[in-house]
Image (cartoon, rainbow over all chains, first blue to last red; front, side, top):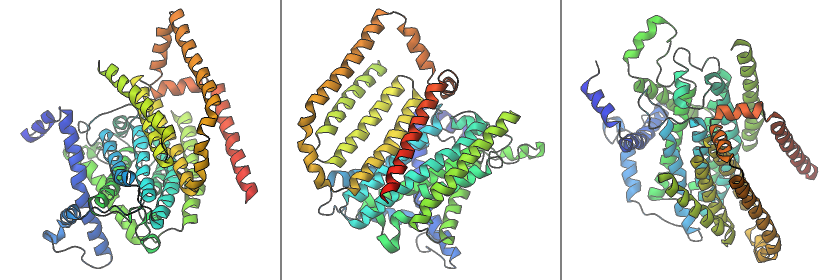
Length: 337
Length: 169
């Protein structure tokens, strides 16, 4: 029943080095594509065309930009802490990439399944903050330092909200393993019973990835470009890739934890089992792209938050909401299950 | 074989990064070596099959506490810290006493382990706890009281910090 192509992919999948190359390569190839999607979607929302020149409707624009950045000179500003300045982009990119090792894209399409996968993702992505702080500090520039300070405070505040929002679905699934969480959603996704957690997670993930309307660390009207203002060439590109890889990471986490991962929708109804014809990878990819496009949609719709509003939202709205959600989920589970 | 090699790698890296951490002139470099050390300690936990502890080590220490350290370091004037460095060897007696106590504690445990032969079972029971589910069950049944006391102490510290900060404003 399976085509030869699928069989061959599954055979090659047996070797972990090939798994790593495929997942990493896919992530890195997605980045230029996502930059193109972002510019295109924002362009059309603002009633203009966006990139049109390179390739069909500008689809190769991201690759052209990448090549340009590769050829540019890498400048280290005078007075910068040279070793940390070079280290910072690497620290911010590597955690974003290695976190993908536990994301299950399909029933067989994942590198590894560990019993603390959710904690692993939280632990690894919290290290990415160092890249931003060190970049801002080592640049020896006040704009960069201000951006880094804002980013540190913001990421610490919203990491709590993300962690607590994930507790609700974890209680329903009864496991930390992402494969286990996806399997627990075969008939019903956690989106509906955990709609509050999803709301908290969605807002917090915008803040965690420093995306608009929470892009204070790089607010261009006040801080030029924030923490990466002194970076040029490929090192700047590293931060760029890290930002998009992080966006993909948080949206894959949202897909796995709330939107059922590789599971097709409406599986509670017998008639809808026909949707299983479409491979799980495509379902996963579709859900992830939906969330990624919503990132862009939010960016072109909402104005930026003020710093005190940002902190108030994080500590006084999202964290209490997430805590209340944990309590309610616990009570319902105690009564029903 | 692999585990032994990995252990010696961790052993060398933890010691090296700890020594580098306290000898670096620059305080941000010191924090980075501390980060490196935390990572290798997490590796040690994984080697002991305590994956939950490893993840929590990274989330709490590397992800939150050390970021706060960096945050504070950026806000203070580094030149004021120059005087602190000169006092490094002034703390030598205290350091020697506390290191000696720690050393005595570790050696004591080792002697006890070899004297009473029931240690393998205890170690096995501890490694089975690495599963987050079992750990949670142990924390909320057998060790509920110590667990709640620890959280109460943390709450007291939190309230105290808020009180100290709000008095100044």
